[in-house]
Length: 509
Image (tube, rainbow, N blue to C red):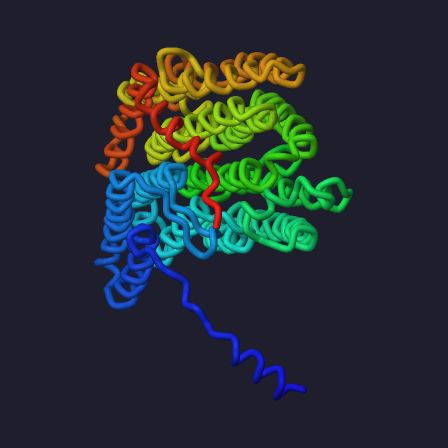
């Protein structure tokens, strides 16, 4: 019996998959960066460990070069039977991940070198996590998506618990890990149900078959809901958000910044690929679910943020609320092809702008905490008296996050509001009202931090100027310029949102 099976298996010829090395060049460069940083860390003395951060940053920038050549080429590329696609959508989001990774390196350089941390392992894990995000941007297959998710998540679990001698650091890593494992299990169960009913793991194939007899069964509904719930954890949507505040507070601050933008963006990339490629015809299932998640996430996040006294926890709940704004367009995406394109455009624009302004805000938080040694908002009192530049820059980021024109955040929120209202449905109008009300609520706690910096006396009377390391200064310069440019010239970021809409033009095997 075994011999006959082996004989029949050997009779089937193996056809090697066709590889497009140009399309895979960003992933190849990132993999090489991972290996080089690992080897350099093994064979360098402690005083030369700064090489690991420099090499990681160079690797991220080097990975962006193939993105430019692929963008100039302009053609969509599909591999492995449509399971891995490099199109304009993938290129834009890969660029976001690489920029976020590079800015995180800048934020981490002095923070890690001056602390009691292992540098080599830190940057090796950071490179691995960014590699997972880049793979996620091209994944059009359930298995590929899961592998990418685990590749970006497992290093993030370790990085979140990097402060091993701190109780809050241990809590951060453990809580993130346990909740992540639970979410992965739920998501895998949903994937197994969808695969069992459609007979394929390729998203395009699922999209072709989900409208058939299987799509009308309760099993299909459960599968879709479970998969979306799994990624709801990754974007910290309410009620799957409980890990975020404690993880953000206990993790090293650069990793908190990284998780709040890059990891969250990866979750939204996966949600968009699922909704627009695999489940687009079943908006009757995902639409109400995403509506509830969006409304609850932005409302709960903002209301709890009002009561925070620690600036990192405030930004943790702010990040949760921002996830609600980003989810809103996806709730109405299935109304029509035009609304679907608007939803992709709104989400991509929001992710780009949010990445820049939130990383900039965390750069200021890191710079200020170097002097105050505290995360309490009251420790920011009188910041303008001894760090006027940081105060002005932080004010720009705060009001950009609140959506105040002409700073970058206004265009992000305007795109969300325009998309949900343009759907011309009761759910869309309801979401428009919820978005508007929550934007006002968010302004209150952002303005409260600004008030503390500008109008409250220095709590301890220490007006010693803050010395800002060069790497953080570069990060601040890049992010503040980006925030202002995106606000005054929204067409610069609007172009990237426009080209990303080709996600609707599915590359079929």
